Amino acid sequence: MEGTDIELMLGVKAGDEACFERLLAKHRAPVVAFIYRLVHDRGEAEDLAQEAFLRVFRARKSYTPDAKFTTWLYRIATNLALNSLRNGRRRRNDVSVDEAGGEQRPPMDVADPASAIEERLVERERARTIRLAVDALPEKQRTAVLLHKYQDLRYEEIARILGCSESALKSLLFRAYETLRERLEPLVPGLAAPGKGIGT
Image (cartoon, rainbow, N blue to C red):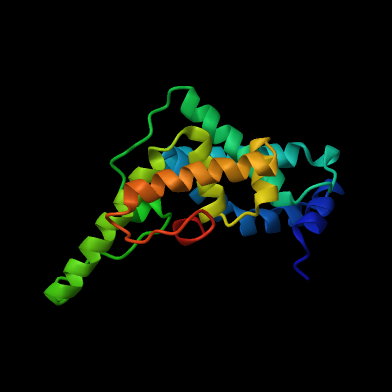
């Protein structure tokens, strides 16, 4: 039986290292992808994710299931990533769109029809433009968007991670998505309001 995150973490607290391995297997890739979208450096994202899980393991004895495990984990990961950025480590802006999405796509097949190649190039440029627009947001807005859009966390969880009220978070996301709507309207006509479209 897989067990819920809380059950697994309680197992870790009780000394069951296999439970920790299952949590690591389940959450490592999404955490690395989330941190990568903030710091834009694959090695740094891997290192910070490892540190996040080490902190979870070290804090196992004091763990109490008063919030979702993912809320606790992403709060640690967010703080580590933002501290890394504030400490002056440069974000790489020359990463490929495929890397930014946390996935490696196979190289283009030279035998593809010209129209298919053109479509893929357009899609890559579109994704790059969206990434740059998100990167240009203020730090807290960018983090909220990444947690909401890419990690698919609920308002309550994101508010706990960022240490603000749900109403403050909704206001933060509204401003972020409004900025993105204005910047991306030529690229994505009819971009929806917060909570829809790019923000879903």
